[in-house]
Image 1 (cartoon, rainbow, N blue to C red):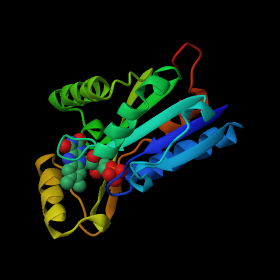
Image 2 (tube, rainbow, N blue to C red):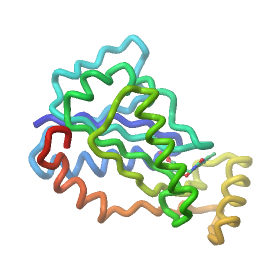
Image 3 (cartoon, rainbow, N blue to C red):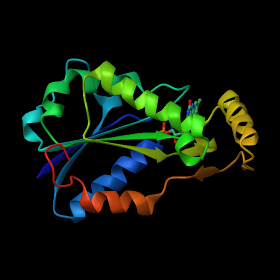
Length: 182
Ligand SMILES: Cc1cc2nc3c(=O)[nH]c(=O)nc-3n(C[C@H](O)[C@H](O)[C@H](O)COP(=O)(O)O)c2cc1C
């Protein structure tokens, strides 16, 4: 089985997540192609016929996913809908327990499916990270304020990861599950 993992990242956490998933699938004997969507030119052709299943991953910034992820899902929706599909949506809201934020995540992933036309068999909300080492002054200020408002004490010179790697490893040990769309 050959799996496509296409991802969009802004500060790098989703890249780390995508690579982690790739390593785990490869360890199971699957073939994996990692596709960083930022490197994809509009006219680049991706032959979906080569893939038996696909994972798409992207992260939230200001309640929005990266536009290149939405474009890619829309362009390949028909082929993606024919294969087991997993959408990994990375955010900080997924790290907390705020019911309103979790409702927002569910709404945003449904909107993504509607806008793109891709209906993944499985959607998983993955907790991301504060990546202070990647932020400019203003982003750092904004993220410190967000951390403070959530009662988190963060070191503005270090990254803080919330990603549950054990849960992801567990998911990669069994995905795609038996069933028509994984
Ligand atoms: C400027 C900015 C805006 C963000 N907006 C949101 C948001 O609206 N909702 C959320 O849950 N997380 C938000 N986050 C957190 C990111 O989703 C989180 O840091 C994630 O790990 C980023 O993944 P990436 O490094 O792959 O881009 C934001 C982060 C930054 C830096």
